Amino acid sequence: MEGAPNLCFPPKFAESMRLAAEEMLQDVMQTVNDAPDGDWISGSEEQVRDRFAVFREQVYQSALQARIDAAEAAFPPSADDSDRPGDAAAGDEA
Image (cartoon, rainbow, N blue to C red; front, top):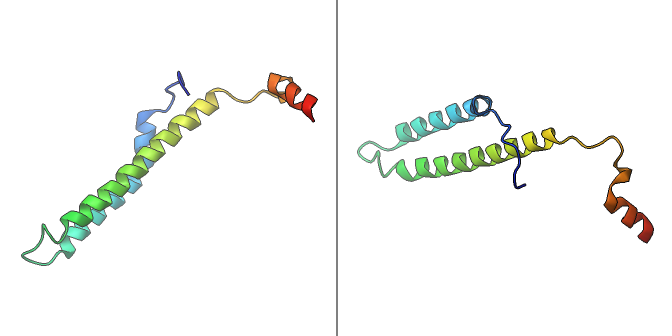
């Protein structure tokens, strides 16, 4: 998709991810709260890191999908696809 338009509005994307971000942050705090006394860091650090890794992947996938959706919306399909060059060749082979 080289040269695809940059049509996804960043504030709209941020708003669409707000609930997921809030849930992730609540999970982080709950993980730290659940860590045993005297062992807060080693009792929570790995779980928090893993949670951020999952969230990072979700955010990136959502951002890519938003960009794809915006690019596809910018180029709606024509009403009659039968005039495409590939269709004529495919029809000759059938």
